[in-house]
Length: 305
Image (tube, rainbow, N blue to C red; front, top):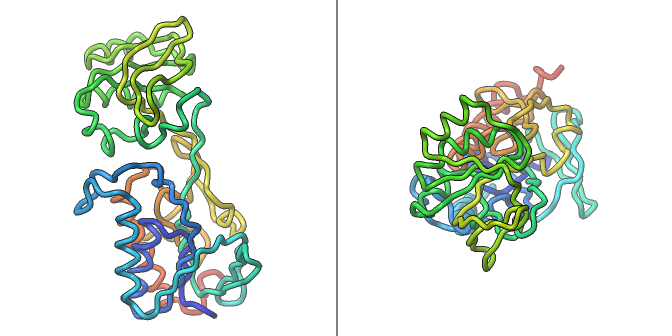
């Protein structure tokens, strides 16, 4: 085998996994296409020790740390296929080459699909957001909105008043019950049934949303839960099981980030219903350590027999 462990995906989860392998003095290759999900965010918040730094800066610092370990290799390559072979795995690359590994860590993340509303996509990660814990504080008590795709929006609308005056735009996606309306009102959140048809302001900032009846409502931030899907089908090729999450499927893993396929581990947004930089890094630590222990305690992948 070329490498003890190949990590597919080079953002917070993948780099954290690789660090554990490197420190165990095993060979690790990180395959990455340099298009992380967080590339649209101006800053990462709520990440201990990294609050306010650009995700790209955090990633660069992690890569610099890893580069100090002699058994770490990086490749700006897309993995397009993966299969089990003998006591490990073969990964086919977009460049037509192949690499082999005794174990795999999948950390290639997910892809977002956003509502088709004019002006929304170009503001994604700046004034159109998904997580109030990541971005709410910086909006400084200004008016906020929630764009509903389903009843999940109720959860966001109940939370957001702690960050600013909130309007829930139902978009015809669901109709709050009388009890839900009472709960929203108790939190100071308004409900608006007329659909949002466009976002207004000098992008990527947001000044207001325009409604179907011509009205405009001033907003500094609009929160929406995107639909998600894995950024690659490698896990499907390998036979890894998935679970249904609130925004889309994610890989089923155990407490140590092992998938349902022996020798394959996963971390980050790909393997969690809750996207969060800190959680992704922590899951990467677990996955990298578990992959190393698998090499020690199950060297021939006997558990897969």
